[in-house]
Length: 341
Image 1 (tube, rainbow, N blue to C red):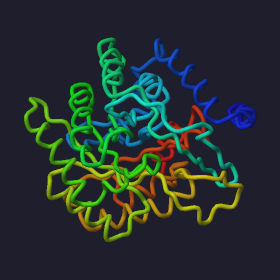
Image 2: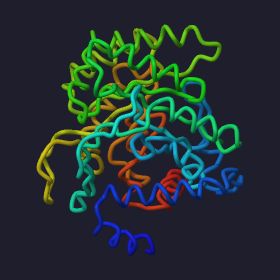
Image 3: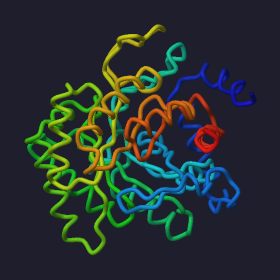
């Protein structure tokens, strides 16, 4: 109730400004919040624990990439009950992202529209911050790092761009994600085509094979892919030995939205994404689910939507927009529902 009152006030202010203020508060709290959750905390219920691509997750609900781009608040997400955290998207080169305004709430549709454009301080800065959190004993759950292509990098040079970021982050990441599906970097989604995607994943797999500790490698796909193209990408990932697929990123579709929509490009996240992302998850899982793990994201707002992702084939689930609308109690509300349901 308290958060709903606060949310109504916050929603009257520019979305990115509120996000920045929230991050400042969470960053400050991250210095002293309790990350060693009690055994009787619902977020640590043994019934929720699972092992996926060799990692142990205390519960299956994670914070999706995009909220904490630069790993500023990693301890806070754990204290709030998330079972894992995915930071990023980070790029080889620090970049400011697209022009403002670039983040919008769509409350009538329980959605967000963003055209941020991978604004981040760079992969090396992210790695330094994660190193600091780990050295201070502030990391207790798996941490993923989501990698994107720098806007200034030509498509032909994408493998080297991703490889640089991989080398920067692999030592401090529990898993790494290849993001070729954001709609907010020109030409990025073209990298989902099998030839381009093969060049990127092959470069990272070669680097990974040379490491003492192999890092699980995942690929995040777009919901706007045609089914055949999505299946082709999934088959490629399986053939190459990729550990997991994240389904899915934001959508450029505007169908079904009932409220006002800001003009211009951008990806929609939240409730409108649920149906397509879950259908795509089931399609891919039914085809290759015995050979690769799946993370379901898109429209997770409660235990019911989380359970639907799990039933569609996800081993893990993530949320971003659900947290924005649900507030600090969101993660525990979801996992409590999973335990009782």
